Amino acid sequence: MIYLVLLTINILFVYFIKSDKKYWLLSIPLWTLIFSGFILWRTNSDRHIKALEAEYWKTAENKEYGDFNKRDNLEQTEKRAQQLNMTFIYCIGLQTLITFVCQIAGQMRTRQKMYLWTKLIFGILFAVVFLLIAMMGIVPSGGMIG
Image (tube, rainbow, N blue to C red; front, side):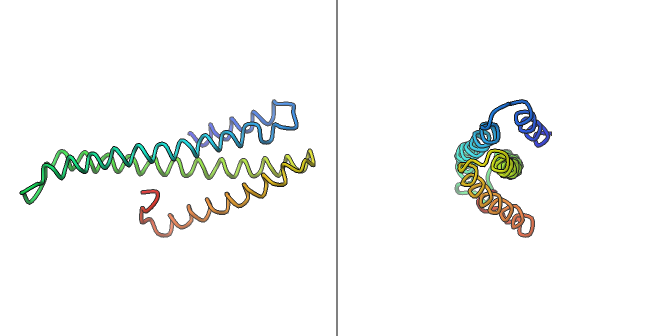
């Protein structure tokens, strides 16, 4: 659902705005917003998970096992975080593709030099995101995303 909303917002903006800047005016700031949101989410999520881990290990001191409820809460939090991480990654990938296509369209219609540079930048970013998603599909090891 969120992917459809993202696509619709971009298409409607390009369709209804009558300016040469319409090809980057929404797509690049929206990409930046999604990417920044992912970084902030990851930072806060990691901090919260580390706090839950510390809380669990405090209950496990001098025992074989810690509190089951705290461990279950930690696992559920990690699982929800992983799901949201993947949603963010797919949104970043989709917005990168949309922005790349918008930059190509902007260069073809306006012949402005700015679109040449932004097309190159978002083409490289799309290749990187595509490879990241492909590697996560082949080897779902967690790592940076998990």
